[in-house]
Image (cartoon, rainbow, N blue to C red):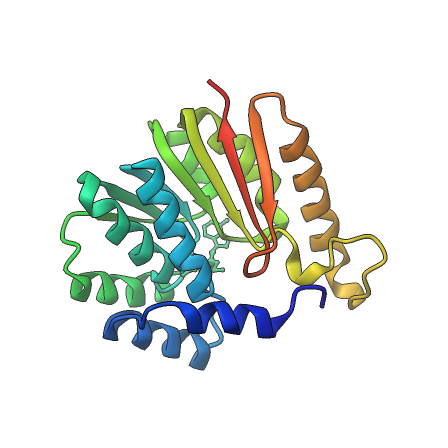
Length: 214
Ligand SMILES: C[S@@+](CC[C@H](N)C(=O)[O-])C[C@H]1O[C@@H](n2cnc3c(N)ncnc32)[C@H](O)[C@@H]1O
């Protein structure tokens, strides 16, 4: 573990208290072991939406909708909208219940199915795309979303450092080799892609931020 849990906890404690709905979702995620973004990452996603004035947002990996609500709330001032995709029907249903209670009427469209099948049929363009689904599929999502991001638009990807295991020499269980190698390939591709300018932050489980060049 190269990134300290204590630092993440400290950053979380610095945040203003989340409202009842987000707190309830954080507890549900913990109870049901659903890997949602940390509160510090949720807060940062909201900051990115506000600072970039993103209005058309695409999310791959809804789970119970925790990050979706951070994104959609931040986009409200820009009359924004979030399209979010997940293939897990039970989680999508849970997310829908939270969306109904969030007051974000009409700001979220939830699509059911494998993102790799849905993305080719989406029109775009999107101001901001957030990827947080199967880590072994990141390169595939990246190839499919490039055409959907507007020039000057942003791509944000969660879990890219995967507990620090992408760092050469890090020790992890052999069952994670395939995912770690996929993430390494993805980060190489993303960082060297001529159409994108990328920074990777060690926030949460590692967050990559890319701007599509104009
Ligand atoms: C890490 S969770 C998403 C957490 C959510 N972004 C949050 O922070 O609140 C990953 C989600 O991606 C979904 N997923 C994985 N592979 C997928 C795929 N190929 N297409 C659509 N959804 C996928 C899983 O069902 C799971 O709910």
